[in-house]
Image (cartoon, rainbow, N blue to C red; front, side, top):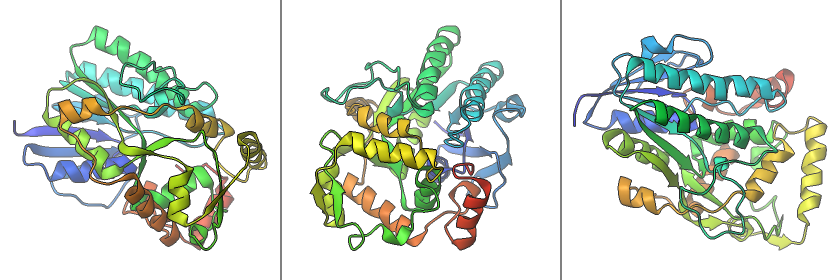
Amino acid sequence: MSGLRVVVTGATGNVGTSVIKALSAVEGVESVLGLSRRPTDWTVPKTRFAVSDVRRDNLESQFEGADVVIHLAWLFQPARRPEITWENNVSGSLRVFRAVAQTGVPALIHASSVGAYSPGRNQPAVSEDWPTHGWPGASYPREKAYLERCLDIFEDRHRTRVVRMRPAFIFQKSSATAQRRLFAGPFLPGSLVSSFWIPVLPQLPALSVQVVHSSDVADAYVAATLGEQQGAFNLAADPPVGMNTLADLFDARLIDLPEPVIRAGLWAAWHAHAVPSTPGLFDTVMQIPTMDCSRARIELGWLPTRSPSAVLQEFFEGLRTGAGWHTPPLAGDGPVARLREIATGLGSRA
């Protein structure tokens, strides 16, 4: 297969930058059009960037003639204004789906998430047929789950090849500052994310989450772009991460701290406007199932190249150094940037 023309929405974010870099290195890809809400001066071989907002701009003109649309555009914030995230994430995604159908794009690859899955923390690792009804207490899983139902209808009505990627928590060094802005806010000094400043951590025996590197996720998107697969694919590196893993990374001691106490602290910080993440996001993390990624390995030939410990080590190094990338969503850290976060309201910067 050669000469593929690929359009990527959300091209300048954590996953988007990795997908763009991976696609540009593939011989079978002729051109890539990267769409984002804000302009970028980042240059990549075979890639053209355009400013396009999935909420309101003419997507049909951007998708015309494309062979594959990879839909990554997503807003995590402002979590205090769920109508805004719904407009972008749900209404914007529906506009993407309609534009794909109207222009006859043969393939749509959609960024779903482990967050779309129904609770299952006491279950064995689940495959892609586990229910996708999300956790109702947070916007992120609600929106991801709603779009799963929308794609069910889309597949019934159209012949488009649809792929749903359901990755675990995605990290890389250059996304560290962006993710700190989105989830922890400006009052977390990156220099404190070290063994010297973190001598103890809560036990949290129920916590077991999976992580994956952004470049490994990008490899799965490339495989789906070049192939003919359809349906859902779980993406995660093994083994799952618990507090023991974090304790080893920080050389910290685990102490008993009940889950309700931690949640109460997060609730207080949220209502004091000290952090941008809702307590419901903590509940989501504590409820999600462990995923079985056999299907991605067998059908996409996908295997993550970085272990969970290596992924987290790289990410924490990014936090300590204020790492970023050459796009607005992944801008690096600094005193002026922190002051801007505070001045504009925690969680308002996407």
